[in-house]
Length: 205
Image 1 (cartoon, rainbow, N blue to C red):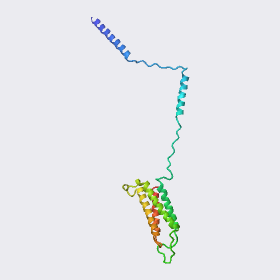
Image 2: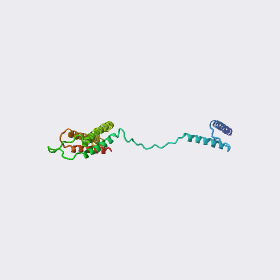
Image 3: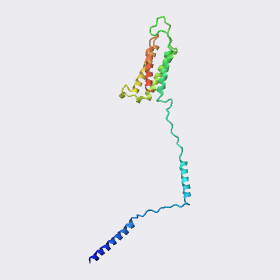
């Protein structure tokens, strides 16, 4: 009796095992995918097709030239004050070299009347005009570079201060000399102004 019952349990267990195996085989495919084998006859066609695709890609790719280094223009709004300042210093040097020899400030009453339209006077006027153009273009192009919050030791602030002071001193010297009928001492003031502009240019060169 017990043997029959155990046999029945074994048979039922086998049935369940077979049923579950059938269900699992229907839902889960554990077999490897079929490998697609290309025949030798198809290989030349595939290679030819690949070569055509590669040639199309090469034809579509244009040659890209490497970008050259950026070179700013020689003369622009931002560097115009620099060249005008250099021109001002050159004219100041020509003014100093063309100064007439003789007394300055302590001339005797019998001295000859001073020349007011000679090369020295013309160079001096041109120097002041170019200095004014330098200051105007510098303020217009670099107004944002000047800030008192950075302190007066900032190179940009020193550049502005020395440039304006130098131009003002040269203008004062020229005006002092031109408005006097007799020779007056003005060379030291003019040279100090020119030196201020040289230092201003050197700070931001």
